[in-house]
Image 1 (cartoon, rainbow, N blue to C red):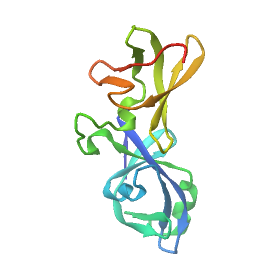
Image 2 (image 1 turned 120 degrees about the vertical axis):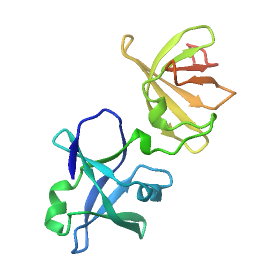
Image 3 (image 1 turned 30 degrees about the horizontal axis):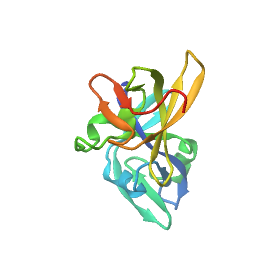
Image 4 (image 1 turned 135 degrees about the vertical axis):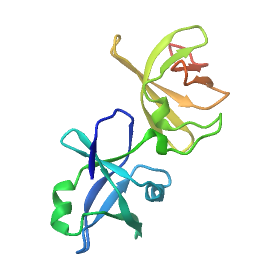
Length: 174
């Protein structure tokens, strides 16, 4: 494992517990589907504010969850202090998307404006609701929050990653 200091990390899960007697760990995956976390190696662990690179030596679906083994972790006692530790990947490990697809991490922090130029704020997070995803937009100056459905071409008119803007057909008083 080697230490890495960069802001280009995307959270993909966290260590949830010990699995077995050989140092495997239960992982809570943020990926969709959750088994996609198994396609990434190395993973990066957040330890004392630093990202530490860890090579995944093995992993599989176990019941309803995911378990992984990391190189140089061979005992459950080594896993115990890591429980709750965030797991991330570097941005360049993501597979390319089409022009109509976006990773949630790409949308977080973008400015959201409507067709009249009203600035709602910045995307704080995204919520999956079943019908469609919803942008949680926070305006720090106004101390306000609004929810805007992420429906391409109907509500979301344009996503401009280069300029950091999402243009929406949404009124300020909705």
